[in-house]
Image: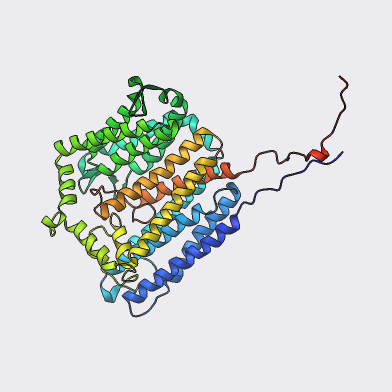
Length: 467
């Protein structure tokens, strides 16, 4: 009797992940050294401490991934760590520019907003590890989908219900502020709502795929099935009306429409979503002054270059100054742009790293989204496919909206650039998002429970049967 042939175990590729993380830490240290060299007379120990802090935090996370998600995508976390490390270095660069020249290097470690961003990085990584430890099977989230949906809607609604003094910043009521602490609940609501969308669409996919009539070669759904889309559209309009948050409104509605398309593979849902969005945008522009201001600044920023258009005009000048290769880390003037470390950090990158540097950053985002979509294609269950696709697309849409606003392709929305911009809510929530993608990719790449391969035909037992 020939022993069964056992298939070789699939490699976890955690060594590749570790090598990439070492490269990320070294790159962040080099950028930090270049910044200090350009802004001061010498280099302090700050870049060394910065690199050591990143190495410690990323190293602990790497060990946790080895233990709790050994088959997770080996490229996803290093890509995210690259953006995070570069973002902290650029925020530190803006902190130094805001300080007096003789005060910049008296403290030999990161201070100001950069130190806070490092602290939020630690919190985000702890939550990423918690996701991997607590959620051993991503399919378990489907059992709590309606609860998470209600929690997500509640988080979206809370800032609108609070007084403006506790929720409004720069005209948008999207914050919860108390005792000197502030949080943007919409960042966490995004993840909860995506889990709900994935579970709901898996359950209702067959119904939503039915067609009632064919127009111009496209099958359109039945009128009775438009309810979920209309509800999502109305919810996004309510966010826009009561919270004056154009970015979140666009993000949530866009995520739902794309996940609906992925679930049903009906092009008609995209067309219906675009028509509803266009109609809602026109109504919002007609009725609300803050939307009219955003559109006017977008169309004619130079009409009020020293007033309402100052931010976008200075960002465009910064991008033009950077040209192809940039002025170099620390050699530009990105601090002239208001909120250069948060909403407009893309302009900081474009000025100091140039078009090539900004393109490289966008390629990193494209790789993150691509790895997420690859996970969606390879995972075996429908819920995991939709969840991974929704999480990946949410990052793609957010980056498009942010970069489009800074480069004047679309009106400004106020969203932050994931992992690069200063801000604890965005950073922590996006690390939770990456933790979910790592968990799903671990399930997608993990070998089947049985490693027994099919026996060769030569070793198969034979039996003669008399008819």
